[in-house]
Image (cartoon, rainbow, N blue to C red; front, side):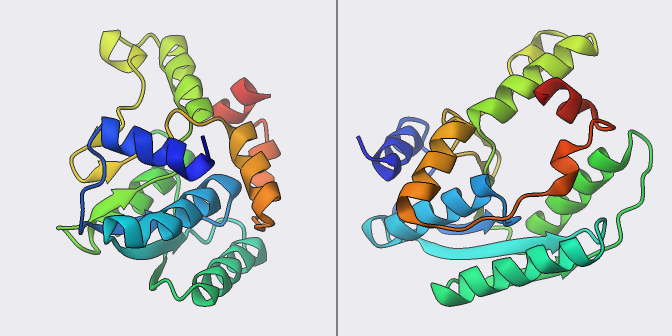
Amino acid sequence: MTFQTQILSFCREHRLLEQGDRVICAISGGADSVALLWCLYLLREQLDLKLSAAHLNHGLRGEESDRDEDFVRQLCAGYQIPLTVGRTQVQAQGRGLEDAARRARYTFLESLDPAAKIATAHTADDNAETVLLHLGRGSGLRGLAGMPPKRGNLIRPLLTTSREEIENYLRYRGLPWREDATNRDDAYARNRLRH
């Protein structure tokens, strides 16, 4: 089974994509989001998808954030995928910088087209990390269930796909991606757990 066939099968099983859907793919430039965008790009004709992409430059990593934005712009332009870019300066508040960045990202994505589905590149690895983080914080049963494949107009087509499968697929296809240096920073709880 090919990578995109596996993703399409998961999408059909959970009714994530329907013929003619408008889909906004959230893209950071990282491996997961590049693989998701490429998969949706390959499936767009078969499912008559109106595909676009969206990137939020959080302004957290200075020039590196700008290079991520440039990478995403070039990638989308190369495949003629309409792209919306937002910019913000995220400030830590309440539950920390990661949470503030996540909230800013979802606010941005949800502001673009209320009728569109928003595809995010959460993977099986992300889901496992989320469950373990919730467990460590003393979550109830709801938190232990992890991320659902669909919540409102938000869809997660890669939720059963591992990071290793994604990177192997990108290498096989010869597709580039960006590495976020903060993913190696153990100051963040998710990174400590991952490492």
